[in-house]
Image 1: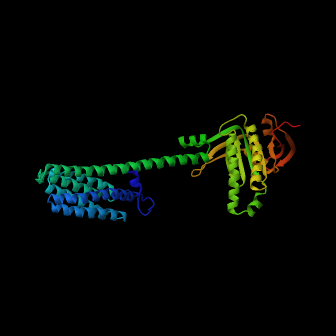
Image 2: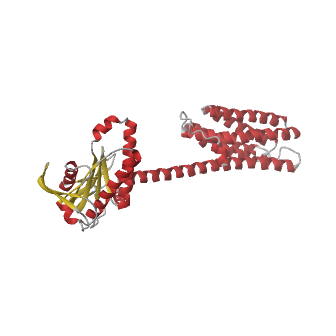
Image 3: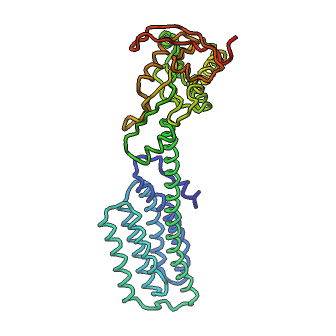
Length: 403
């Protein structure tokens, strides 16, 4: 059944509403089967000597074919009138010539189905249901019990075929509606997973969880954290020599490798600003080794850039600046969320990068004191730092004891 409905999928026809698409698919399947049924009973009614019924079934075949054709052309009211006329007329004639035992009156339930399936106004729907109920009541009180004096087995066959048609309508309708429900549930689940993935790409998982549970402002103070800024030396003149596509592809390749490195070290990527990359350790999950963790990341970042240059034939160089201390972290924005850091420690880390030297890891005295050992420092001495005055800073050479 799923394949049958799938072949009639009209979701690509944007000029049709979803309700119209559902109606067209359903009526295409049910209308085709009903037209086939009426075509098959024509010889039976001729054999029974009921020419009027036989000729009406010819009309039924034509009517249901027109219903399918007109519906697929986007028409609604004319197919609805044809459905009411065909079902109502067939039930009336079948009951008149064969009797109540023909079971034709059960087909009036299909008018109720059609009234709700056709995307038309409620007055038209109520009118269709009223016609079905009124005809059912009139036939019940006016029709004879048995109007055809032929073999009882023939009447049983007609009763069975009429009841089977009602069941076919119901089963096909239910199958299609349940298929739509499953499709909607699957689409909803996929949309949920996509939104979850996008949210976790923008925010740390713990922060995303808090954001989903409450609309309260998310702001945390961390007394100990480390922040790293990395910037490509000479990026502006390089960007002028590259096409937009080449520039974006280069940055995407490099930053994707850095993203993987951040994940490996259990750090938190805060953001990229042009060609600058900002990473933090110790937030949002606190850790006592945040300085060692971010320094280990810095050395692997240099190795990653060396490998990137070798593979791409470029000669990029990074300035890396690190500082440790208290920071404030929180989520800002309403339409586009951003998890960001603020505080003097963050500004100082940015200054370490901007006052640094390519291929060097420039750190502050605060970060140096937190490192557990095994590193070689080159004291740079007191340097003027914008917004900070004179500061004593260091270059971190390699993660190995100095000789």
